[in-house]
Image (cartoon, one colour):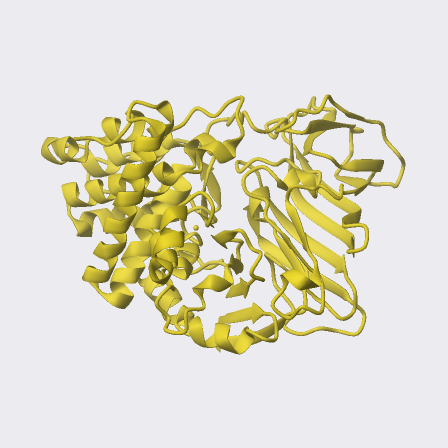
Length: 490
């Protein structure tokens, strides 16, 4: 994700031409990569206790979501049912615990349609309330009938006047970091992945799209169905409803936008296919089928959001000269770092954004040259230095690995994760050489594809597979200072 509000706001005001350039500083099987001699295979993933989720997936985990929701623009709510397929990982587990926030849970039934008992716990203003559902020994699917609140934090309801066309309302979601629980009862932690199918019922004059396999035109019924066959964490589940049209820009790339801007958007983002190809050369096959972009109305408060198969992007990238497409390179980069290999908790957020800034700049180097990517790095460094000055050089929030327990994880989404994370990976690259680093990074994406990882796992693999036996390179990389120390290393 690239935030327009949290990152580089002063630059947005003073340098419009470079606004998005500064901000951008938000399955096939790949061939195996051989580890360096003496390297050990990564250890099996351990139980992850996420301080921002009530869920206990080590007991019962949700593996698939079936969603059927009606979109009510007048009341500004979603109403319907979530069907949750579960995996009982502990044979003695007799309850399913979900994350909710502000949901009106009407009824819960099990496979056979019989009602079961459920309890909503005490609500926390950030975490919401746990929904505990009683299971029977053979339960495989849980059905939750519910309605969202008009104040659901993940949903933005726009009046026609807030859109480019000015004729129809618009709805879009933003679930990162822990806001999916405001629209769906789920295990809202990045350590749990689900596949999903969905039906959205919308006014017939509007088109619905999701982070899934999408329609490319409206129908007469206003009923749209979706499928996401690749497992994703809850924060990457997304939907949008509006007066939208689609334009193809490549064999597996295209653009959705309001009719008045769709042609402009399709031209501006006409290099997306080349971006995907460049990323594949570096990091292996693109595993999500299509890569499309939804250009949102002017009210979208972020630069971009990396929803799988359908990046949500600000219309301010439509500069008319393709000068601001680093934002798209960033969101595309998330198809490997973040979406494919995900931070296990929000304390590990830098594994998402620091890696993606690095990938983004390698893509921009491939497309625009080294001088251009170094300009992005220099601008990003300026932003980072200002952020560290604002936080304080010794603040624990200037570390890469954070401790956000008891706090809103959005507090960790600063330039530190993005730019300090990038600089650390750049330091490792320069310590071992680009060829070795590229092999390691591609192997990282292959080894941990469709899984969640911790900072400790990355540190272990860097030491065991990349730096082992090379004391000089280890000294140059300075892993401990970068990851666990505040501020910037010398």
